[in-house]
Image 1 (cartoon, rainbow, N blue to C red):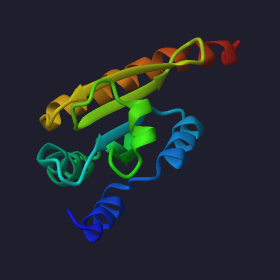
Image 2: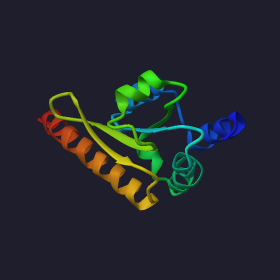
Image 3: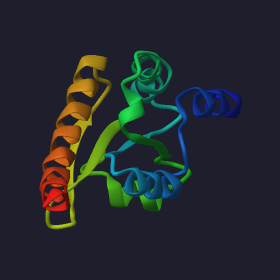
Length: 139
């Protein structure tokens, strides 16, 4: 995949650098979705060029802050995020009631339905955290 393709992906999917996506997730109170991959990885290319764009077109990625981390170009960050060495890894972080982060991941090239289910679970996790705050605010 060329740099031009990566730029096109970023524009199409609204992919942000990791730090910006993290800040965006916190500001918007939504989960952070991270794809860790590499340009030479066929499964990563499938996720970046086929699976995620289809989810974006269906409006499914608007509920998360999305970032892509290149395991070669940013090995330190990728190493902190990944569990195991296999790529692609699609990791979603959602807030927990104690202020920490709930982490879930899918490894390998997966179908859009699996990614959508992952996002739905993260949204549900986030809603559990937000619900008590809303109840307290109404009192």
